Amino acid sequence: MNPVSDIEKRFCNNECSFKDLSVSLCEKFSKFLFKERCWKSTGQLKHNTAVAYLNAFLSVVALAYKDGILQNDISAEVQRIHWNHDTKKEYLEESEIQQLEKVDYSENPIYLYHSETDGT
Image (cartoon, rainbow, N blue to C red; front, side, top):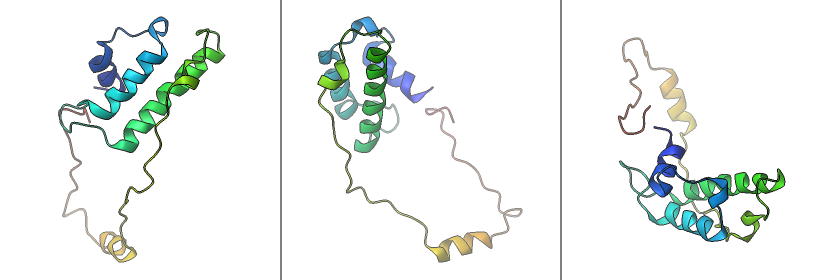
């Protein structure tokens, strides 16, 4: 299942439309992203993932206002959540990359992770 449609189903049972949008509903959606168990397998979204989803959602709301679908720019009134810039990202070292380049993958097939819950 598509992650966005899964969130939509869990948040509003696939019954949300532009006519339902309000600052209150957007704030509830924000709290939902940050506090509720959004995924069946992993639970809560990571902070920056939730921020990205909220920003994408609010961008669509702003476009709906710009295109005349909404009469008010609701997105401007919703409290924004800031990115967590302290997130530590790990990268492979040059020596690790070189080591991987030397592996004969014809004898060691790579199996991609497959999960029934994420549809990949």
